[in-house]
Image (cartoon, rainbow, N blue to C red; front, side):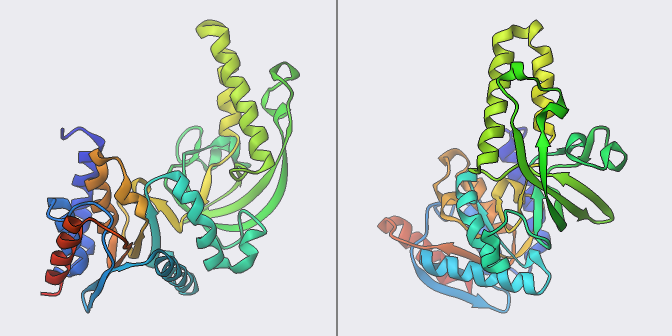
Amino acid sequence: EEKSPVFAMQRRSGAVLQQVVRHQGPVLQLASRLREGVLPCLSPPLLQPIRNEQGQVRCLSQKEWLNQARQSLKAASQQDNPDAARILCYTNRTLERLVPHARRAIHGDMADQMPVLPGEVLISRTAVMAPASRDGEEAGEEPDMVLGSNREVVVLDVTPESCDLLDFGLTEINGGVPMIETLSAKVSSGDLELTLRLQPPVGSAARLELDGVMQRLRQQAKDAGKKNGRSIWRQYFLVRDAFASLGPAAVLTVHRSQGSSFGEVFVAPDVFRADPRIRQQLCYVAVSRARTGVWMIGGTSSPETTAAWTQAFSTFSE
C-alpha cells in the first residue's frame, strides 16, 4: 500500500500541510477531517462561512464561487503574486473549461484574442525536450531536456511561427505533411531563458492537423510491427517533442499542485466527484494546498452529508 501513488500523495501532502497551515485554523481543521474520514468527501451543502484571523473556509453557489475566483486571481496578478490564488480541479476537461475564465480575469478581454500573452504564468504539463527549443541542448536541465514537467515559467514575448514538419524527417509517405501554424514564446524560469515552440491550443485547426499527423504515425508504426516500425516511432517521438506542452498555471489539476502551497485555493466540484478509490486523497490534497482560505461550491446534498458538514463547520471556530 505504501508504494501506491495515492499513498505517496497523501504522505507528501501531510508534510506540506504542517508547514503551510498553522495555528490549527479552519483550513487545517477541514483538511484533517477530510483526511481522517470524519467528513464525507462529497460535495458540501451551502453553509455559513467560517472566517477568523487564522483563515477562512467557504461554501458558495457556483456563480458566487466563480466570481470570487475571478476576483482573487485578478488581485493576485495585480500584486504580482500568482501563488496568492489558484483554482484546483481533478480532470483536464474541467481544467480546459475553467482556463478561459481565469485568463479573462487576469488579462481582461484580450485573453480571448491570443492563446498565450506576454506576462502570463504558464506551467509545463510535460517535460520540454530539446527539439521544441531554439536554444538547443546547451540550455538543457539534462541531456535532450530543456525544462522539466510541472515547472512554472513567465512569458516574455510571443511571436507567430510556421513549423514545417518536413524539417523533422517526415515525408509524403506519412500521409501528407502539413505546415503547423503555432506560436514561439520566449519564457523565463528563474535565471533560465528559453524560446519554445508551443503546442497549438486544444480545438484549434493547427492542433487538429498535428493530432492527425501523430495519429497516422502511431497507426503506421503499429501496422509495421516491432522491427519495421522503429523508424516510424522515431519520427513520432521527434514530432511530439518538437512542441512544448504549456498551459496557464492559474488553473491546475490536484496532481500537478502536489508539493506547492497557495494563499487561497478554489476547489472545483469535480474533485468531490472523482473515483471513490482516490476521492479522499484528492480532496485532502486540494484543501491542504491552501495557506489562508478554501473556497468550495455548495449545493444540494443528502441529509447525512448535510448533517456531517454542518457539524464540522460548527466546530471549526472553536
